[in-house]
Image 1 (cartoon, rainbow, N blue to C red):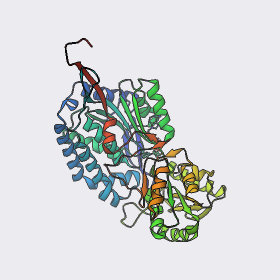
Image 2 (cartoon, rainbow, N blue to C red):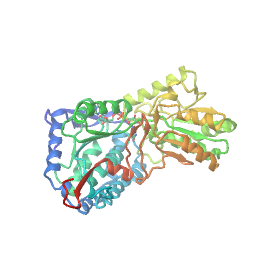
Image 3 (cartoon, protein in one colour):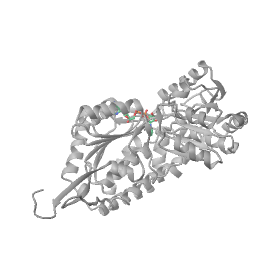
Length: 473
Ligand code: NAD
């Protein structure tokens, strides 16, 4: 790990609880990306990693996971300090689950094999699954640890080497993971972390001629640029996990208490900075009024406060830009004629805290119903029939996630097949599991993270063909 980049420049990283600078971090640029890609290329073309038996790669990955377990407190602290994430959640869920992500893909490292094919002629053929090569992994700031391992783990298992570009807002835990990777025995050049900005370091990675694939998680707007850069350079393959404006459909037969809890969990979790946030809550008309009453009561349980405090459920937005962006959407909502039911204001004098906010009387064409806000802001709408609910749910350019609350198996079956989204959570929300493929439909991107589909993003298939008899073809 080399923390001194070529130009010697640094940038500030802040604590969103106060807005104060907590560290200065080396700012990588194009030259640093060149060096990192060069190191990854050498490690791929000549180093041991892609050539090790899968079980040997797995052993090192397990060691890496064990080291993460030994540093849970420090890692959870870094993500709370740098991203305003709840410390209790990081310690109990986020950090242990990244160690398990490594273990899950380590378990696959020695089971990567092709197939023997049944050819139609006198040929013997089989396929080899080979690592795709040097991969560029570009990640956002909302889940700095989860996003790092969702990409790094399958790439490691596949035998790839990589350059990771963490978000400029949250570089700290990624730098610690680079240090732990070395301690675990991951060979030099396999994981290279370059902290820096998107338009410079990130863009250099996406347009690099020596990078074979880019796996990107971030906004739809930048996702488009990533694809353009890949097309304009070496036609590297791309996978994109992008934004969302996910609907939660609550039907007349739902348990209102459970539905209100799920609706709040859907959009307030991680202060709404979640790509799958259930930010559009669509409620069938017969229970609408009662649901609203329950929801407003329960919103009070989402206590805003210092993310290190065990009672806090909503921490600060990641930085001033994000804080102001969310507040400006709230102003738009009011101007467009939606009714503010609760919240709508900053929640503290210092830091980037925003009250959990719920709008009702939201219309389909309002900005707060169309745009990804990425904050604790819910848009509530009423629908009459199942068909109308489905129509509203699908009326978005995005298709990342969705939820349904109902006791009816018929409704659950019909609606889950009609929604155009990568996941449908029935009577739950944020039901993630490392074994469950995750990724979008429509403008939420393509290519799955999690599950064995993620491993295959970092592999390519080669066919090997030979005649069975001594014939030239
Ligand atoms: P962003 O698109 O601004 O940035 C994401 C990453 O891309 C950062 O590392 C950034 O430095 C880099 N980047 C920016 N410009 C670039 C460029 N021109 N070339 C290459 N890289 C560039 O997104 P963000 O604000 O960090 O994150 C929020 C967005 O991410 C939201 O839209 C959210 O929905 C999405 N997100 C999606 C998922 C998912 O799995 N689908 C998960 C988390 C976040």
